[in-house]
Image (cartoon, rainbow, N blue to C red; front, side, top):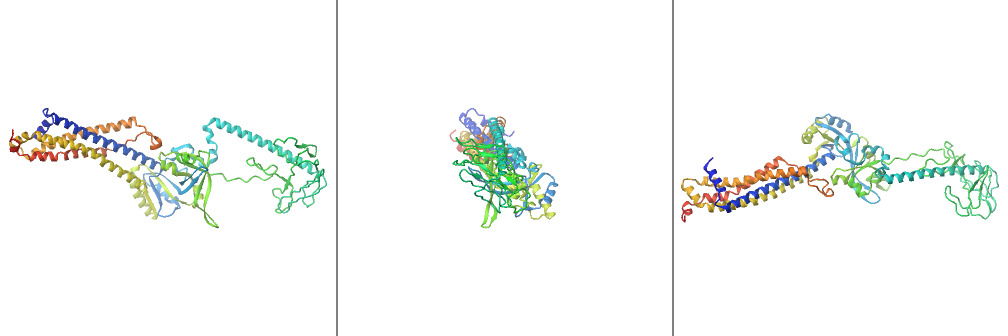
Length: 583
């Protein structure tokens, strides 16, 4: 060990200058505190950036292949090349466009994406992010209609009881309507006089109403030749022919339909609705009258009573998967309907017009990112192509998943070159870093600014090192003069004070790094809870980077050494005769 080190250590551990020793301790604590804050803050910011990156690449792909303009036509050959490329674990096409989504209470703009449900799990974590419902219900939306009741047993029980009551009531109405039909048909077989006949000709239906005089009769009988035969239903004179609705209680004093053998009579105050006669299924078009009884069907019950025709099957409402935050904004849940509006949907004689279509919410997902949970919605690929008017052999782009996220840039360059060699020159291959370049560039810039700001804390702590060394130079001036008179050079004197400042900065930097790493490990192990409504994460994230920790230590040492320059120069320029004049 050289004498410069011995002198520097002796100066630091001197008991005579207690004020200098106190300032030395304060200098070490200042440097340690600055390094501690810098390590902890950079690690926490790295944790937020890492969490954000994981959520982005979990929802989106590592690499995306798209056309340079417009849609990607005939994607199957491109998919075959991508799936055979090394380090690729999966690929899936998708269709995407910006649309509007609305309910009775709110409206918002979203990005509608059509996905292949069998392949989407290979390129994203969407199946694992489903919070309520199921992704496969996109192909069977009916299973999601009453899902809300499964989580509420009391409401579900009430719903089922109401449904059973509705079914039994509907069956009762069908039976009453069938009995009314039979009664009317029996009454129509008896001849009677007709006062007035009203016939609908040329419409496929033939309905005759015979209006009797007071105390007279009402004729009703189907006819195909324009002259119906006569049946009679007695109607008491002076009574108000108020219709009696099947299944409803009769008003006081009103009558009802009385069944008899072969004849239907209206009790006082009752009214018998005439049957409507129309063509059977298979009758020639344009046939007047008809030979079958036609009665309008009850909505939701089934085919019309007495009708031989099957009801037309209505198109099932397609399913949609939305984010939890979007569901909260629209006030909907699984099983509810929403309306999606395509601004460029259809061309009418008056010009372009939006196209709207109802969708059934079959599931909700939660990515942990507010921007994704409020802006994205998913439907099947075929439904998206139809709704967005995209041909079935075209897609917007192809998502690619890799074994390692770090290989994204290499795969981007290699895959682009291979596709160009195979003749796919018009395709763009972009990694997740390029797709989110603005976001991660902002994060890097923010971390750099924080690093510079927190480094100022270490710089402020270095001022105490400067003041400590200046006081030491003044107090040790006679000793410095003796050293120089004994042959010590100015460089040796500078080296003494540089070593002394380096020791102060080194101890402070080492203590700060140790305390900073220990603090980060403690936060990661124990966890600091956060408000999930604000940060969308439960605990404060920490991600220590070895490179950042080393840079922090180097910055602390350099600032400490820089603080020794002025005191060392002052000591080296000390004139021994002037320093020893008054001693």
